[in-house]
Image 1 (cartoon, rainbow over the protein chains, first blue to last red):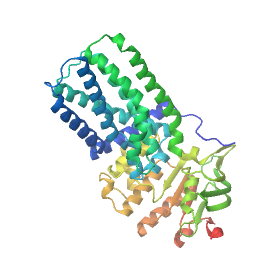
Image 2: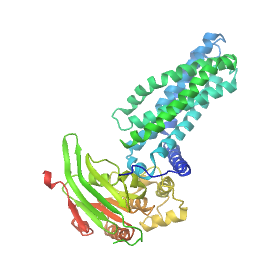
Image 3: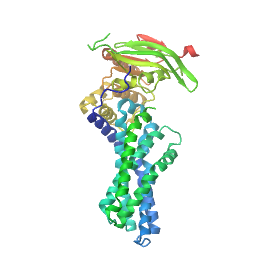
Image 4: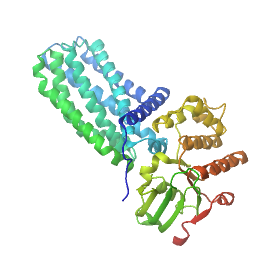
Length: 238
Length: 215
């Protein structure tokens, strides 16, 4: 009877390996700036273009304006993320470093390391987009705590889903187009809820109005994390 | 031969076949080697030498048959043996944006080795890269890249060393380095080479010819 995996994999060693993967990717990203540049360029371009038409003078404080801003905020985050977050796995395939990574690193550590990098990139992106919207469109965030929680939960779901999709499409031809095509239906429920609760945070309504949406965002993040942890080894080794 | 004192490690493969689509690469391969021994896989271009090496390294699965590493009673699949395997192969590239030392630091950390920078520099010096460890790998020549691959493959003192075209980019000094490495590996575990170079065939205790039966 053969054994398909080591008897035990201490969590400390796992996180240490995951941290090594994340550190390596961050170091490479800081030297190439591929994901950072493409994400930041898209975020800035979108925010500036939108601000010309819907700038401080173009948007009133009514409910329709708040809805518009919430949608635009998440559209900017989603498409900028699509431009950069697939790089974590695609780069390994393009530079043919996959064999080295597979031989030296436990599969789960690869996933967790890549997830950490994408979480960091997305946090940076969300901060920049928010600042651009505040400065260029005079957005007033009535509930900053709620707004930060929405960005955190939404960002976690977005980063987790894009990480596993990037692993799935990395070996495929036309991987960049495939990445967005696969990500959109998977992320649509998350985006719809994120927009809804972002409206609450911008408008300054009570936290209780956002509780249902927050629960859905948390459940989405949890479900996709569990599914990714279960599926990743199969994806990585196939 | 087993010098480590532990039970000898054996690699046993039985009725192994590999097929890509409807094209069989080879079939009915069977054999066994153990610690201290060197196996050379030989065959014409496209005969599946590298594929068999990847199967032994757990990077691919056989279409049919079993491959097991056995030490004592518990057999392990090649995938489960990965922490004890070192691979040098043309298709295995390093991170070109990083330096040689950073590449080695990453692999050591990912493998959970607590190596100091001094120990890693010593490892790089042992493969002839002393003084070039802080340069980006993208500036390395083919021979230097191959030397770095040996450092990456040996950093964890593997019990299984897999070498695909082990001296393809090397000069005589590089060839001597590989000779030293294979001699040392005989004390630590088993070695498998994939090559067609007549001089490298001499390193093997056994030669497994693949591909000819299906030509």
